[in-house]
Image (cartoon, rainbow, N blue to C red; front, top):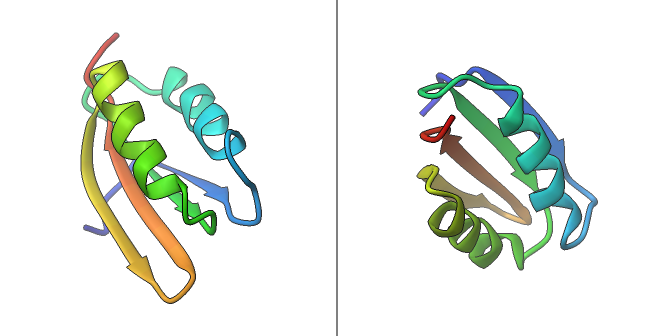
Length: 78
């Protein structure tokens, strides 16, 4: 997926900072918009899965390229 409304660079940050920054970024989006997050923390894979489940937002994509992780979240709730 290459279409997203906003991008968050959380590379170099460790838990819980990528989640906290994503939560703040999502708050600035309208329902239906998407946020792409770039991260390097291996724990972020499970963190973003849990975050999506807990918040009701949709995790559209979760991928890894070498030591970098990419997530795309779709804001569902208002």
